[in-house]
Image (cartoon, rainbow, N blue to C red; front, side, top):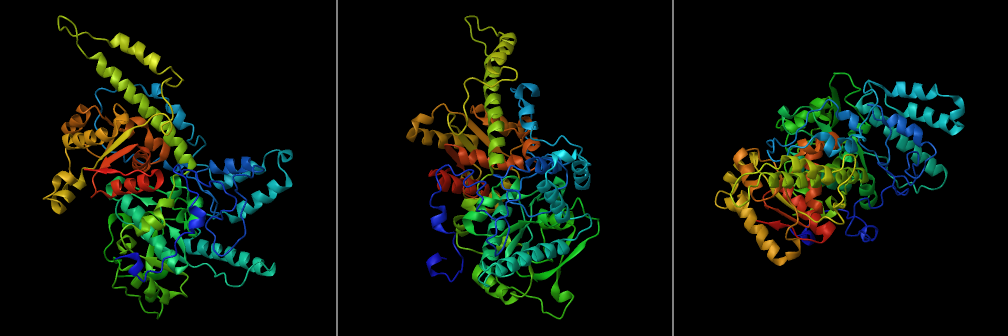
Length: 571
């Protein structure tokens, strides 16, 4: 389908707003006071948590250290690492690298751990407020007291339901609208907020594209999207979930695109709720997937957040909306017939059919990584560079090269080299920041369940779907012929390969496999940090090589094109 020939009614972002986007977009417009986060129909600026307002930072910092996020809709929400203290690490099961054995203290784990929560994880928001109230009164101004009281009243209490919190947010929107009308700043055309929620499905990349398509539907309907978190895609991965704001700059995205979103964590925290399932009474759209056929990701979401999609038709005389098409225009047209419904629920929205790359071109390219994520990436990347240098030193220590062909053990000299290379508590003298002074190449190798996919769908083109290490080396050499300035730069491999022999073949090429267990990626970024860091590496590399059938690689190719003006290389 060609966009020009379609009746698709998609509102594109204001190109005048985004045309200033530079080739280094990360952090663009971060902290802009004009951004109004997750609000509908209001020009009112919520500066309570504005990054530029430092009057009450010490209170916000105190509250942020408690393992119960504030229920206010905030601008620039950031993920609290303490929420992951009991979660398992879903990183790739890469075997231990025999040539890399470095003490953790040499890798400066403290650099990353300084971002972790050191407070008692059992403390509650109420205890935090009580602690602040009991401080010396002289340390609190009148504005501080007012802010504390407002925050405490706005905070959702244990047992508050999703529906009641949604009612509270709606009432806040109505109050703001009424205030604007009284002040003459509202033209009466601003609609009262209505909402849409969807079920996430499949793995991380498909959840990302499903989110983009849900955004397209919600934006076309003029609704605020309730955004589920990133979910584990298999039951055996544990109860892992993280909000998208853990990694991406959602305020900037909302500012650039005009999309209204609110994360579900700001409406309901499963850690604060009872074990009772809450029926979410909404108009369920069937036909794009079905409530009768849900994958593990959707099931995990409903179970973890203790929600149940219940159609309004089950509790009222209103008919169930049967959508027998997955084509975008037809779906939006049918959903508009439900304009009076406050909440719409969609299943398997990732199966909505849109023209190729439309969701990325309209919205995906404006999902920039947050400044916090960028900062942590720089620290982890520095450790990755160090591990590569130490690995090379270790390999040299096992060389035997003299006139008598006698093996010499250079273990003692290796220790001296390590001390010189990585001074304890210091930084390598020869390494710069990855985006400025240290170009690198990334090769993406998808395996595990992807093997069966390729053998089924691409049985006559397996080399393009499952290239060997030798195939990848040949493609890399072809690239270096055209770009000789990249000869000798580090080559990092991001992969889910777990077979010892195959990993040995990769290392034999002189490439370094990114081992997230050793880098402590999940500790720094949370359970979904490893694949996100892989995506960041692929986005920042001077060259990224992969295969077209992989959606993970296609996202990297999009970022290379739109953020850096470079073309990714496929086998």
